[in-house]
Image (cartoon, rainbow, N blue to C red; front, top):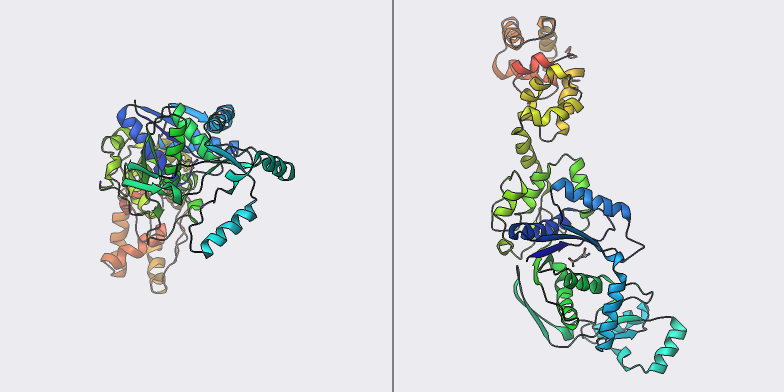
Length: 441
Ligand code: GLU
């Protein structure tokens, strides 16, 4: 039985980087007919916020990513305490009292001596009496997991055969001095207890995986399959980490990106499969294979989402857009006609309101100096409204005869004068929708 999980910390909104992780785990479970767990990593009570828990669910639902089960780490603290006790009994857990400043000093010394900055395990030599004295002086210590110093190996679903020398890694801290369980212990307990079979996450977790494998083994759990996807960069290969804050799913939604545009792109980007627009999650899951993803950083360009969004919208029948057309302010009797006229010219749903505003309230066109007299003359020939499907043809014919202009020089300034735009729908179809004409030249 395949079980996967997506495990965000509710300390902010989820962004495109998180989405990639969520999608990969979701699609593995979906394809296998397994279970997908949404796990909220909220062991940090200060930084975790309920508003972000709500927002994460809302964002995933918007995309059509549904979960079979939801868990919160803050509700499982007793279980983590029990795991900590088990590690103590097995002599794989030890209390340390160094302050952050002392640890920093140790690291600097090691680096100066050309050594890797790995924790020196000084606390292992403390006697019970020394620990008592330190506890009295500094309060409770933090707890480190004692790694077995051997090579830790696994076959990664994306990166292939990996091996990390445990001696090159510091014994991980699993409980802080103030008693807070850190993500590593909580995550390992959850993966074991919930029967997680596949863990896909960013390549920034590779070292964590090595230590987690040893903790899982120490707790007698089954080690899941791990896969680490590459991190996203900007279009030029620049680091995206600082910009991720502006690439939250809610910002993209507010910008008008369609959910299936985002899903279609993110489920294939960085793989050997082409990005193709999919209509629903079943189709996305069909061709998905984690083994097709590469280890190189994945370039993400937000702008790629817009042509996909436009294509989705262009294919919508009126019935699917009626509510949006109404919300844009279009009266019912013009709604379907408006949709047919503008559909090929919108990129996002937000553009509906922009077009309707032009038609309803008139454009404020910038008329080139050399066209002013021409536009004034043309406007004098414009018949009284309401316009119909013939108006554009008869009007431009009359303007042509009066001014001698033809082709682009005739049509383009007129289009601009009426709509303020150089491009747009067929003007014969636009005319009947124009409620106000402002241009005078
Ligand atoms: N809460 C962790 C994170 O967001 C989860 C990592 C994992 O998938 O284990 O980085």
